[in-house]
Structures are given as structure tokens and as C-alpha cells.
Image (cartoon, rainbow, N blue to C red; front, side, top):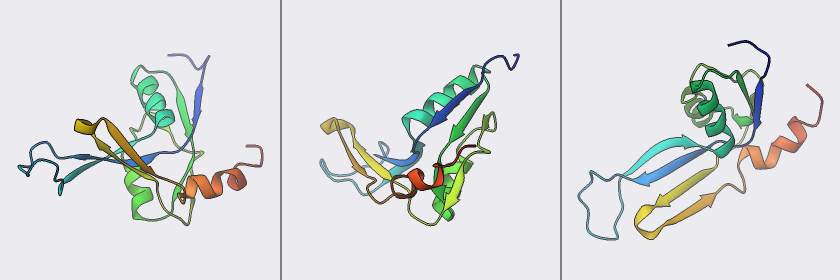
Length: 123
């Protein structure tokens, strides 16, 4: 596909936790969770890249093992050369399908605390 168009997505990726459906646990109890990487902007970039559209994801992730987890989950077709690393935490959210509820914990994520400073310059 030609490079006539290039999509750029800017946003936060977070760790997503859902109860492990294979765990046999009493009703209303969750002790085993499945982890994945989520985030609307990143999801769009991954989907477009799967359709062979050139995509770049712009963000900031922690410069620790959890930041590595986020980056390792991104397919190689998505350009992550504009992702910055900084000290901090990754945001997380938990999904309870049976309750149709999600709980976000992102107020202190590196994206929420540093993105405005790290991306204030032109690039």
C-alpha cells in the first residue's frame, strides 16, 4: 500500500484485567484475572495496521517492566518511534462483564501526569 496516507493515533494505553472465565470460583468472587493491553487510540492503530494502513501511535509509557509489557503487546506493523518513556505508572482498568462495569485507575499514570509536558514541543 502506498504511503499516500498515514494515520497517527495519540493516547493512553492501559493494562486491562478481566476475570478468568476458566477459573472455578464462587459467584461474586474473583481471584484470577487475565491481563491484556487496551486503549481506544492504540486499538484503532492496531486495527488499521492489520488492514495494512500505515499507522503511528504517539504516547508515553513507564520506563519500567509494565511499560515493556505495553510495548511488547503492540504488533510490529504499528510504528512506535514516537512513544516516549518516563518514570511513572501505567493506568489499569478492571472489567466485570457480569456487572457490565469497568473501574479505571489512571489518575496517576505516566500518561496523565507527563503527556502535556513531554509532547509540548513540535515533532
